[in-house]
Image 1 (cartoon, helix red, strand yellow):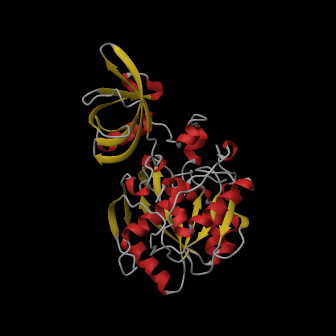
Image 2: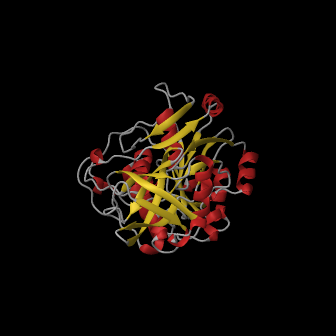
Image 3: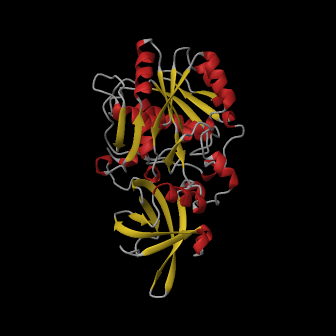
Length: 370
């Protein structure tokens, strides 16, 4: 499919730089098949679900994966920024470097707050592999828990580029860019649909008879990479690691057997569910890495509803929601959201989408809209 099918115009002032407060006061656009769009709030979610439905959350925890440092060569120093995105060994991370072009294999980089090379607050690494698109593998001088502690000491909250390009991270982001149920450290981007949930909203969902279940997918920085190919068939996703426990798989099978609906909270939860489900549609325990790329024409076998934020033009995430609810429906929904003042991206508002029946992917060349 042509990537420009998924393009649209978004005014700069629709990009949220801070989250709603309280979190559950964010807007929620309800998109149901054959029904007019409904403008609600996230705190209305219990009224939109049924007793017996099940919410599936991604409980990954964001680490301070944005590192600033310096590399020295021939007596000259250059600033380097690294965003870690996948751990590959106790002492090694894949990372996106900026600028990356002149960095060479074998070079040393010293990371630390404000990129100062003070021994007390430094974290040293060697570039051992250079890949494409600014990616490299860094071998750190520390390993295991000692490396984790050092990253926590010198790292910054890895805000998405469309926020980080407008302001620096601060103390508020330490809490704002983390779900209240985050448990398993390893993500370098938040599962942002989950940022809207509060203890009060959880209590209301409990009272409604809606159950909560957790999976883990460590979100990588690759989620923010633009699709540079002209055709979706030419784009390759970065792999992310995850897990679904036997307990969660059994619980979701029981929900479905009882007539309840599966509600994926976020595209990361949905991608993990779709990566792990069996051919028979039953959930199974699973762990490993996934690079699943969901575009229109994908036959979903897991979630009945998807709660997610509003995504970038031409992004893999907008392609996923278009696969879930239909491209024309999502074009119309996003146009409604833009016209109605919804806030976009990680700190923005949300939508609740109903899954459409399977349909073949669209063809032809897209036109800009918005």
